[in-house]
Amino acid sequence: MPVTAFGVDLITFFHPGFWGVDTEDDIRRIGCTAPERIWATVMDALVAAGVSAVEVTFAPADVETAIRAFGSAAAFRDELSARGLRLVSGFWQPDDWAAPADQLADEAAAHAALLADAGATALVLGLPMRATTDAVPPRFVDLWAADQLADRVHHIGAATRQLGVVTAMHTEAHSVFCQPRDIDLLLMLTDPNYVGFCPDSAHITLSGGDPVAVATRHRERIAISHWKDAAGPMSTDVVIDASIHERHREFMRPLGAGTVDWPAWADVMGSSRGGDLALLELDACADPVAELRSAITHLRALGVA
Image (tube, rainbow, N blue to C red; front, side, top):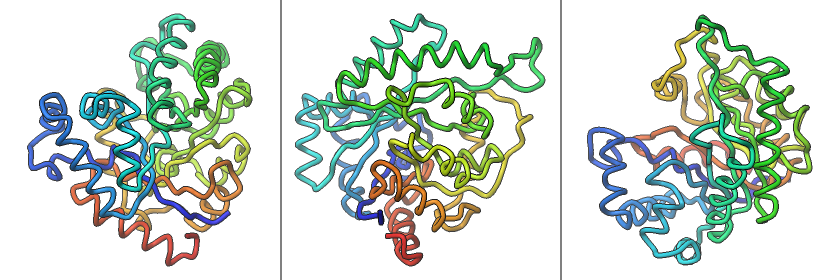
């Protein structure tokens, strides 16, 4: 199935330079005081970039901020539609993975209900981060830990399924669901009728995996995917703290400037559910419109779109 539509995860718009401010905290403050400015700016940029699908993410590019800007999830959906845009998914992760499974399911359902009202059909689930390898005591991602996590993910997936929203686990680098073995393990332990898969080509690359090989093994589980390029693997021995996501960005590259085999990736995605959509992601890009246009041009030049 060829790519016929392009979308973007809104983490792409988290560069302070795009907003004329100094830090990401400044962007969040704009979201608190002027949510309508956030969404008017983002939607104008999406139209200018030539994309038609949206994945919401952290505040202020989240569904809750959009509701504050427009009054309701339905009104947000209408605002997108008026510009030729549609919401396809939203990134979400619990504040506390140690909470009881029923509590996590209720939290996920509340968020998924907002996403569904705004038109989305997928909740992209962020999994817990690993501990630094040399942490004392060590924290192993073994069968017992994976089984405990799978139980929680099952409850989340069952709860969002009732709302018409599929839960898809996301492959964040340095998380418990990033290295090929981690991905194989958690997908084996989760029921495909309740839990889907969101492979991220860059984060699998950062984790030392071959994103095409990983996606090929689990193509029947793919509910949505993130199309992003990276320079190559990072060390698994780095300190994993609050700054790890910013350090990931040092290894991200504009689409076509990294190591991902895009024709092969597109071939796998084309045989998966929703394979006609290329959901692009460019972490905190200073000029997102130009970079998105360039990514679309590159994919079209390769003949995959």
